[in-house]
Length: 78
Image (tube, rainbow, N blue to C red; front, top):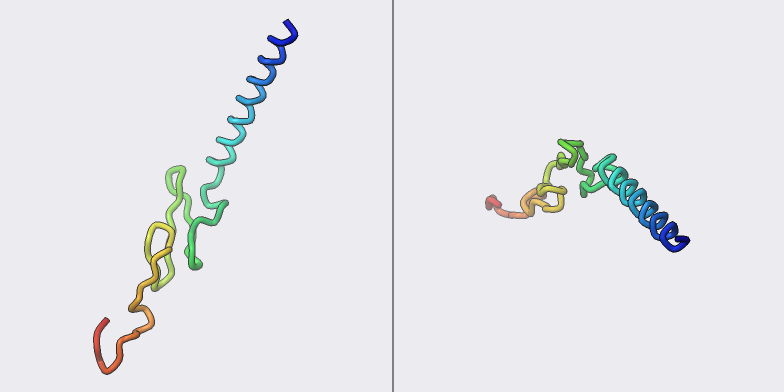
């Protein structure tokens, strides 16, 4: 009987901990600052979107445009 109570208590605690983790994860998708390179995080339908600064793209602004700094010389086009 005592072991049954302990098992029920442990299962209840595990369920409550799981619920808390889900709430924390769903709370604010921008809390972890997922956007890179000074991108702005915006909440969108329970997830997030990154608004990237000029010269960056990708879902988290992780891709740098190699032509942003005009690396081509002598009138060449990048």
